[in-house]
Amino acid sequence: GENVEQHPSTLSVQEGDSAVIKCTYSDSASNYFPWYKQELGKRPQLIIDIRSNVGEKKDQRIAVTLNKTAKHFSLHITETQPEDSAVYFCAASGAAGGTSYGKLTFGQGTILTVHP
Amino acid sequence: DGGITQSPKYLFRKEGQNVTLSCEQNLNHDAMYWYRQDPGQGLRLIYYSQIVNDFQKGDIAEGYSVSREKKESFPLTVTSAQKNPTAFYLCASSTSPWSPLHFGNGTRLTVT
Image 1: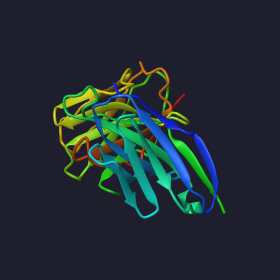
Image 2: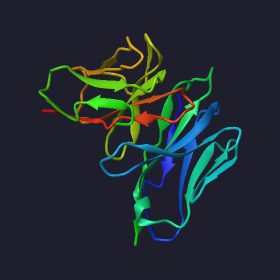
Image 3: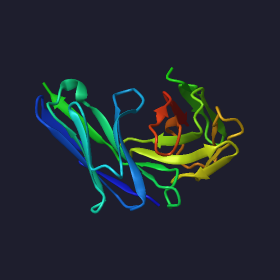
Image 4: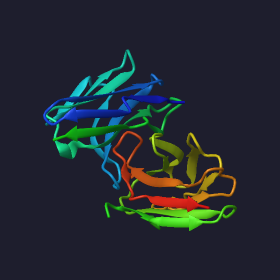
């Protein structure tokens, strides 16, 4: 089955700096890669996602890149703000016919702290 | 709130008792999921269902059971066979395996 590894487990940056979180996946058939943000005491919420036919996607200060050959994808947050502080999770979902079909497997999470 | 409701928010049980966590969605989503969240371990998949009357084991299904008799409902039973049941449980739904998940607010289960 799918295995998703996420690094780093904690990340501390100064306001205005950039933050990068990286994930690797094991199932080459995976074709959907979302990122979720979970604020303290709240439910996870989707912030951006990317499909395997796209190499990069941007949404304002957030971007995700995907390298299918290397089986890794990354979240980039620019001009970080204190309200970006949260736990971020990457995930991977398998294609139809693959061993991970229908499953969304999450990474272990990254605690991002943005200092004012 | 948000179309997917988990109840109760907090649940306390004695060791050896089975307990059922409720998850209801009114989003007309086909797919539903149960995740367990423990500190430092992310979200681990317990069971998932792509369609009514069908479900599959996730990565940590031992000691848990589910049913999917109705599209909008996907209850999770934590049995006495689950060795470490105290955790935060999240239910989610989506239109397909490649669509965003909508999460409930979660149920925090404490077993003593």
